[in-house]
Length: 232
Image (cartoon, rainbow, N blue to C red; front, side):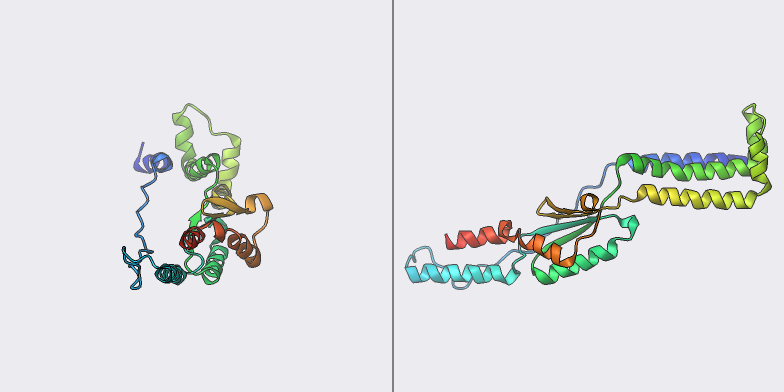
């Protein structure tokens, strides 16, 4: 077996092995994020021995003002999980900008929403099939006899238009891989709870709709809890 045949047979095997390792490799641990909401004690804080009503009111007002510095979205995390291969990133960036403007202090996270595992696995196999089909088309006269087989008639029909067949294999393979890697998702989570699902609704949320959905849940955020503790 010469070098060309070794290359044509070895390359699909190498790609398949690397894809399998990548597919089953564990995800790296998430990098801890620094706490951006650490506050210094207010200058007008109440001393331990001071228990007058006026001092308590001043302390409560100072804590409320301190919370308002971060905005009404403080303590709320919104996750926008979208299909990256579907070109939904532009929609996600638009929604993120709208939420940042509407709810100052809110934390918006953009993430890719992967397709189900069977589709991901098939998407890894498609490049191997592409390379294997092109290699068979180029060196089928040597490959079939080594397996004790006679080249079938369809092989000669495809080889008669070799370059057109190779282009078709490449184009259809790329289309199938793109289809298998897409999830069609645009899922919105607020503090871990699903508030909108494109997979269920079969549509994108409007900016007004998403603003209303997130705004209705701000009372359950850390900001709302801290505000209740201040006045209690």
